[in-house]
Image (tube, rainbow, N blue to C red; front, top):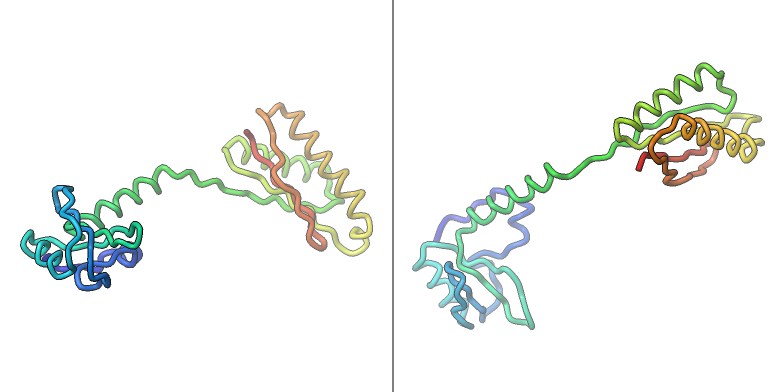
Amino acid sequence: MSKFRETNKTLNDNYLVNEKIRALKLQVINQNGENVGTVSKQEALNLALGAGLDLVQVGEKDSVVIAKIMDIGKFLYAKKKQQSEAKKKHKIIQVKEIKLRPNIDDQDYLNKLNQAIQFLLDGKKVKFSLQFRGREFIMINELGKKFFDRIQKDLTDRELKSLVEEKENRGGPFWSKIYYLK
């Protein structure tokens, strides 16, 4: 049998190999993919030893343990490569946060809005956070609604593709909304 290496701990934990298999009777599949039948654990280990490979528990069906004779090192390497390829194709969406206050000056607001539009055009989500302090907090419902209506209007006036509002969150003195382009 080939030496069972601990190449990737997360992958190794999912498979029982050779003597670590607890079942006494196993449904065995040989290295060519042919069904050998139900045999004892010792017979299955002898078959794997004769082939110079490992006995790997791959599943369980109707309380019968299914084991396959294979090279566990090659199997784990192929599985790791497959996960790596899937990770490369995965698209990561960033959420950029823009923090504002309700009494922001018009020029500062336009700078923040232009920055948000650039983030949206780059394919990122934009989270506008409106922070209230002191006496502003009393007017949170009126000021917050007006402010986010203004943001919504200004973003749609810039003729972006189709703007989607994802979620709104109110927590204490903060009120935030996330926008992205569809």
